[in-house]
Image 1 (cartoon, rainbow, N blue to C red):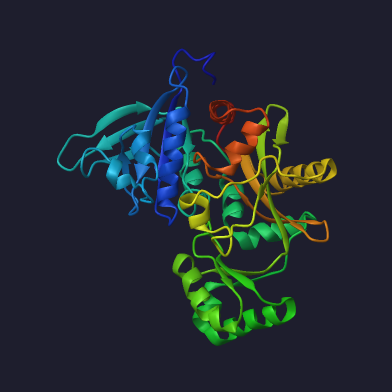
Image 2: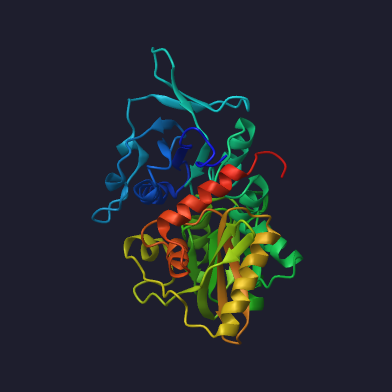
Length: 378
């Protein structure tokens, strides 16, 4: 379906918020999308998911979705109708959205043609929401269940990349059962890794993003606190060695003839922060360099690697691929984000803006690509 061939404007449900630690950033992203989406071309239905998982009708008010005076927004501040709940039918023959309140007759809100999920982290970016939309038969922006799950789990993401011959850095994984059964042995595993690859280490939740729960550990003294912080976000943790070099990112966008890569960007060293953490990204607005100062050969290489990562994980729609350009001149892929941030300072739209695709055009292209795909096996 497209707006040119349909008798009505496609109806877009922008779904945001969610149950992960990235709830607030998802709200900020939704505000940017809602402000830029072409209302002459699309009808829009904003749906927020509260931290406890309730789907709520929300105000279509991008101004209230921004970070203001270092205060993060939430769906609770935007929800309308008290305790009302939005329900999307799991019946693939109906795309009806229903709103219900306690003690009231459920109210039909009409059908949805496509979902634009701007959820980050677990319960949104990890394949769970994508599975629900597959059951409902509703097209959606971005990758399917498998690619979303792979893109969320840094352990299996690296395994997939390595199996396709993509360069990944040294890492170690501590799974929940390892820590629960024998924390001393799990800790020794990390210490042995440090003995082989050296300090400092980065201790991360295996299935979180936006630098939530990540610690840079310079020596043994800080290890226990870093493990506790990572496990606060995810019982499965990943430990990575420090890769010395430059942080380079590249966007991938699906066009009619296949995925294409944007100009790359560089994340410069952040002097006020130990690394490119949550505060640096979203509160202090660390500025990336777009395009990255690379040679033509390096630019071509990272674009090729970004598309290869997109294909290796069976991604669709969009991806931001993050790399390190090591001091020896070799690229190592750090991770991909299947639903990268769309905040006003986010690198993904900035890279495409520099590549000739404006922010509204980027949103339109993603929606049109989703509308042209079927759900199910494809």
